[in-house]
Length: 402
Image 1 (cartoon, rainbow, N blue to C red):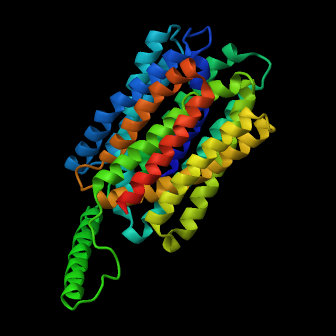
Image 2 (cartoon, helix red, strand yellow):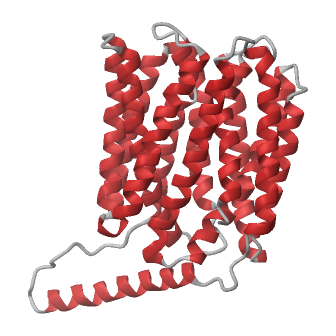
Image 3 (cartoon, rainbow, N blue to C red):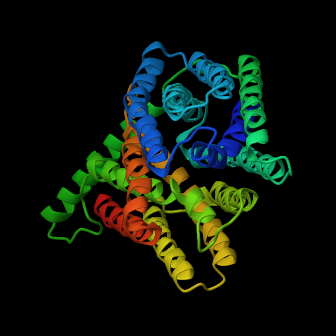
C-alpha cells in the first residue's frame, strides 16, 4: 500500500513526459529544440549532486519518509507555478529546481524496497513497484491523449494540464503521509555485502585448492569491479537520453508528422511494453541469470534503435513499425532496469545509495543536451545511429563486468 502515492505521482509525470517537450517549443514559452536540450541536460546535471546528497542524508539520518514527502510537496507547488510562466528562461529555472527536488524521493524509495525485503525478493519487489508506477505513467499518457485530442487547442489545455499534474502530486503527498513508514531495522544491504565478500573469499580458497592439486579451474576467478558496472550504466543512460529526449519532436516532424495526440499514443505503446517487461521479470526473477540477461537486453536495445532508423529511412510503414519497436524497447528497458537496480543495491554500500541515480544522471544529462543539439545539426537518423552504437558499447563494457 505504501507505493500508492508514487502511483499518483507517476500519473502526473506520464502526462508531462510528452507535454513538456511540446510545450517548450510552442509560442507560449517561445523555446527551441536547443532550449529543450539545455533545459533537460541542465536539470539532469543539477540532479547528479542532488541524488548523491539525498542518498547520503537519508542513510545518515535513517529517515526516508520525510524526503519522499518533501519531493512530492515541492513538485506540486512548482508545477502550479509553471502555469504562470510565459518565457523560456523562467521555465528552465523552475524546471531545474523541480528536477533537483524530484530526485529526493528516488534513493529513499530504493532503500525502502531493499530494506523491507530480502535479497531473494528484490527483483520481484522492484518489478512490482515499477510495474505499478508504469501503469500510473500509462494512465497519465492516456489523460494526455484525451486532453490533446480535444478541439480547444494546445494553448487552452496547457495550463489545465499543469494544474492537474500539481493536484496529483498533492494527492501523492497526502497518501504518503499515512502509508509510508521508515523501516524499523536497517541491515539487509550490509548483510548482502557481507555475503558477497564471504562468497569471494570462498571462491578464492577453492581456486587455490584446485591449483595446488593440479586441477583446472571450473570457473573463472575474478572479482567483479564496480567501475565496469558503473561505466556500462552511464553508457546505457547516455544512449537512452540521446534517443528519447528529441523523440517527441522527431515524431511531430516530417516524414512522420504526427499530431500531439498520436505522439501520446506512441509513448503509451512504449509504456505498455514496459509494464509487460516488469510483469515478466517479476515472475521469472528467480530463474534468470541477471548478469547474462542484462547484457543480452542491452544488445537488443541497440538492435531496436538501428531497426527504427531502417524503418523510417526506407518508409516501411514507419508509424506502425516505429510503435511496435517502442513496445519492444519498453519491454527491454523494464527488464534491464530491474536487474541493474537490484545488482546496484548489492554493490553500492549503505550511505551511498544515491550513487545509482548519480550514474544514471551523468549519462542522462549528457545525452539530454547532445540529443537535441546533434539532432538540430546532423538530423535525427544519424543521431539514432550514434545512440545505437553507444548501446553496443555498453554491451561490450558489461561483458567485461561479468
